[in-house]
Amino acid sequence: MKTLIIAVIFLLTMVDIHGQNLDEKAIAKNEIDLVITDLLDGSFQLKYERALGNHFSVNLGLGYKGKYGFVSRSGLDTDKIKTDGLFYSGFKIIPELRYYLRNGDYAELKGFYLGAYLKYSNFHADLGGKYITNAQEQFELEFDASIQVTSLGLMVGYKLPIAKKFSMDFLIAGPGAGFYNFSIENKKDLPDEFYEDLNEVLNKYPIFDLLDGNFRFSAAHRRSNFNLLSLRYAISFGYSF
Image 1: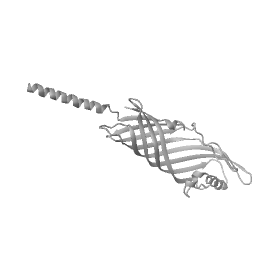
Image 2: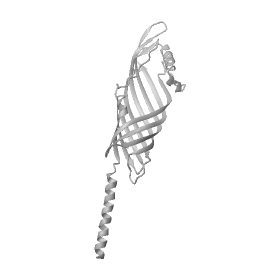
Image 3: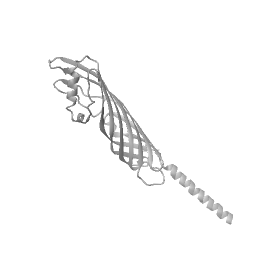
Image 4: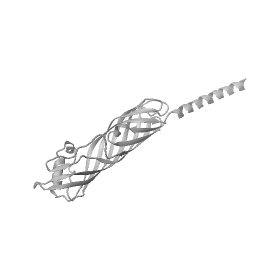
């Protein structure tokens, strides 16, 4: 009888341990997300997230932007410089580290989270138009422009489960600092005064008040570097497995 009792206790213990292992394995520690808000700008971005323990996860986003999107950006329109609308394409890479505030025995990718991110973007644009000098002489504009942006920042968000394997990820705020490297290459000959007029026009835009004094273009130096505050926000649809 004693042997039978010991055997039953042993079997019950094994069943309980096995059940715990199944529960742990049932927790989805991987997730694939589609960033919905990027679609509005003609971008397609997928993210992969992997849980690391009870609270931490790592996330890698890869995105590509086509030339056109639902949001258009107008060009310059002054008495001397008139350009077409601005359309650009390129890619971006965004690694993240997240900390979920939820309580639980095993990792679950849901609830409020805090995190940090690094974002690298590389975009290219073609820009056309015309330039009119003080003497009313006209020059055709045909530029190749490129911009590389590296951003570092923090973020806060909330991931809401909406079904057994599906969720909505709300990146509420991602403040940071962006380091911009901007260059233009003209395919047509232009007088030196064009670059003086271009800098004067750009200085009239409110956003350029935030730039440092290095943001200048010239016939000899068609590259400029500057720093700006950056802010990320996004809504994503995810599938966990």
